[in-house]
Length: 124
Image (cartoon, rainbow, N blue to C red):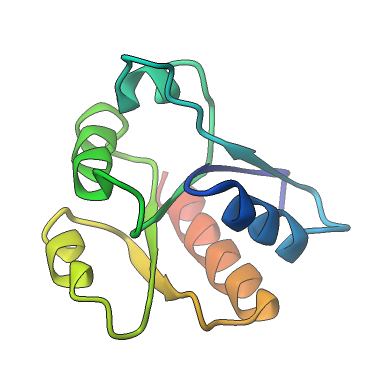
């Protein structure tokens, strides 16, 4: 598999956790930076990625997901949430490709995200 590029909308600590899940592999994990006064579109305009991961606890997560779908419809979007998070119902309505629980270990996160990217690449 060629290098996987993952863009993350989330807290810095979560971005670091994802990066550690892919340590030693051919993957690039980057934090999506939304400039002051900007919108999610400002962050995705300048990134070429294979997968977008959104941490459900961040403010406006559902809005981000909808904007990403509108702008980059073919890029898979995964939501990371707590197992009992009521926001999941709201996020599911935003047409995501999958979700991962915070409780998942790094090996599971790695395997699930790779599977989503493989599936997406095969469909293209």
